Length: 279
Image 1 (cartoon, rainbow, N blue to C red):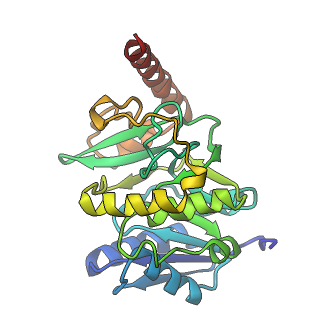
Image 2: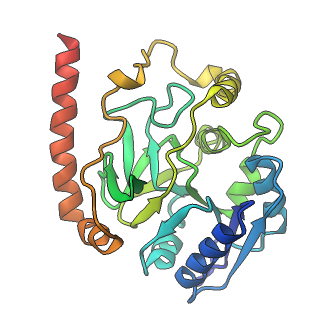
């Protein structure tokens, strides 16, 4: 489908928290002020897959944004960038991997991870930098993290969310994005859009249960000869560089030269760690 010059955006958010839903809606109202858009809030989703599918049936947009309620996007050019890039890519995110080896998007470790995401930890802002090359959008991606996933509507409708297999709140994103990759869609990770995520995820027994469902569903596409390191021995599972005092400092740091410089230092650390492990 050819996108109109000024595409229509549909933002879909599943949230049981009225304040969070209000805050994220206000964020997108500001970001999309110059574009036609709608915001669809689902307050009673049985799972994220079910909620996203239900909202997708109502969505009128050319571009659909599946968003967590605990993120903040700090780029006034967000809509312009996305509307241009979605003409080349089928699915966009902000963190992802160019290889899927297990039930977490970051399991492959360095050098397979890509993206730049801000995080909140102990009342400070941190900058997670994985591989930002090629800047500003990394291609050849196989899966993306679900904090914010952006797709052309026809792609989202074609792939859909598997609400039968993933009938809770885990693995819906890895399954959706990896299924899109397996269907021949082009995935990309945006590195130049400042975004903050207030959650690091929950990797408990329930996640492990749905992780096994993911492995069983995609067994024929996941390599079996790749060792998966324990978290404490993983290399490149996230480069947290600096505690930043506020969002203004975060945005000032979020520049191409600075990001590339920080990643170069991080890459050296990872390569040295891999050499040490090999010996």
